[in-house]
Length: 188
Image 1 (cartoon, rainbow, N blue to C red):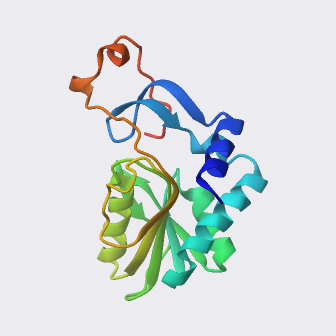
Image 2: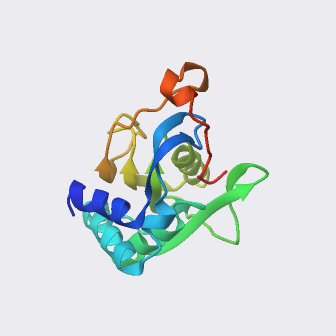
């Protein structure tokens, strides 16, 4: 799947938003990738999941872990395409935790799958959880990498769409963005 094909899925579904957005990372941006909109039709989920699975298959994962909420749909589809187990971490008291009886065995090969990465905070939290359980992270995969490869997780990181999307600290907004009301459309 090409960069343009992935971008077209976002455009066709209305998932590439333009305006003034506050990202989960706290940064502000003119663009927002609302993956939930791009992932509402199963044929697109299957296409995106197959493309990510093809890129990570050589890593040899046995379990896919996704941070909730954003990574759930694509994480489960990547696991399905690979024929491996899928689990997720979720918020409890504001932090991601492994719940619901999910276990990670020492040395278990883990792939972390997320929808969008900007600074990688949720992915890093997930990596830390896997390491606490003595799992072996073999890689990270995302549909969209807003850092254009600048984020380093210390393991292979693959994405279907890598872009350098402008993001600004709240106190360093350009005048045009500062003059536009901000919205926070993502998960909290």
